[in-house]
Length: 317
Ligand code: ADP
Ligand code: MG
Image (cartoon, rainbow, N blue to C red; front, side, top):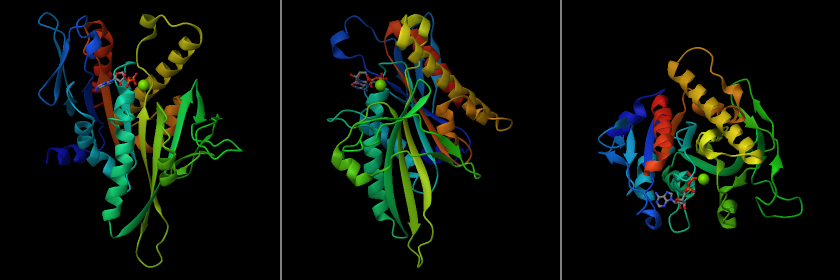
């Protein structure tokens, strides 16, 4: 019921928060200063300066990949009903974004779980047949790279990156990335390819089984591992790293602006300000389901970044 309530509150963005455990090797130096309070609150700081944030769901440091998946499942399943779905992992570098999305071989994350779940669910649906394809890309210094583009002479995926793809929007507002490689799911699965970070898109083609079949309905499920949200001053980055950091900060603030405009429900939505928001245009607005997974550290030394991330995420709701 609680989940239905969340799913019915259309137009707003759901925000879940995941707290990364302090890894055992450094447990003695860092004392945890960020804790979950029940299943919807998180507290930063101690007696003197204590700040509380509320989200649709808070996963404590003990939450497993399965715990996270169970809560995300209803949202990603709505992609089978024709909704575009966008799941965004946000947070400071090192807080577990890639762990949540990709996971490890022992402990797979959302991308693999989502694919397996959608395929299983689709097999139960007697009224339609489904096919799935997968694409992976990244935005690097403002350019779009196709992470699955095959080398001309090779059958291996992901060996070469096709640079700077064009983004087109059709008359209905649907976004099309020209020439983006789409790999049929089974081939992808067999190739055991793992791409860390970036944007993963699962495209779902749904065909009614009525005689004649008709045209396939297409929906998209985006699973996005966003770049690290840390502020640049503190990291002391220079050169290439500084350029990368600037580009990431720009696209994250463009994302924040789009989300803020969508929340206001009227006026101009500034999708064009970054490649990230152009790509996600038809999966962030009306009729789509958006979930932000904000990741935070428990460490005292990260409190500044943690507070920034939680404030950003709270403004999205
Ligand atoms: P990010 O992608 O946000 O930079 P990572 O996902 O790479 O962070 O996580 C940093 C390290 O912490 C990795 O070694 C990862 O395996 C580990 N880690 C992150 N979250 C968890 C978790 N919930 N449980 C156990 N280990 C984790
Ligand atoms: Mg990462």
